[in-house]
Image (cartoon, rainbow, N blue to C red; front, side):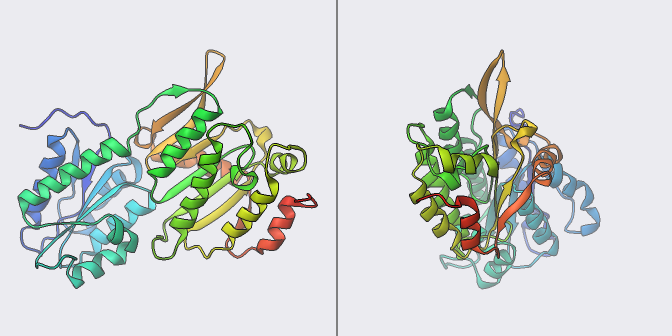
Length: 343
């Protein structure tokens, strides 16, 4: 008996590979596993691009979880669906049919998946042998997602709280991270006495270093850091609670790495009444004013319409100026940021 729908985040299952034996049945098994947990599931009727408009609309607007099934026969439609999911920063559960006793995927299957994303193959893929095995893997993957990625919503206040929340999101984040602050933690380092910021600062550096490594990065990955350059420079010159020398050395080392991800630092005018926020793979962290008090709150990303969320970030970025991206002279940029500060 199908369980009552309890998750407002839908599940979509990649198009059926009609030329490959049993794959229509595999999709129905994956659908049942998700429905048994209380998810609403969307299926495409055929592996035919002419029927894609409604399916793609879900991928573009509903922030679904994507279950991608792979076999030996390459499907252009499945590839396009997965690339669209990656572009939209959706959570993907990739599963491939194992035909032999080898530990890894068959060469044809591996080549097929790697055409979409090498990191997805290396880090996320699991195989299934038969329908029973597939049902178990889909169900467990969705349970893991519920536990780890869908952070419950709650209110709290204070610097410690917001940095601890941002750190939690960073640790479970895989592909994309947008960070908006008045003064840049990445440039200034952690402020002495500010609880939670030091752990977040070092974890942020490590996340960029690890995700930017060419062996694990994906061309769809991005890190965008939005902040006030004016306010950050003022802190460099006058706030003695920062270790500017260490921060400068760390930033230069970070920018000197050869990243494959899209890495941008964006200056904005904080006088426009912006508030700090984080947009990660599955969550949004922001401030909220309630009863004359300021709180921070985590919202599940799928509860916010994709086009609205995209508008928020794009609108802020469009009003700012990209001051660093790949190709800009690092020494010149560092000098521009830190100026004549004696560090």
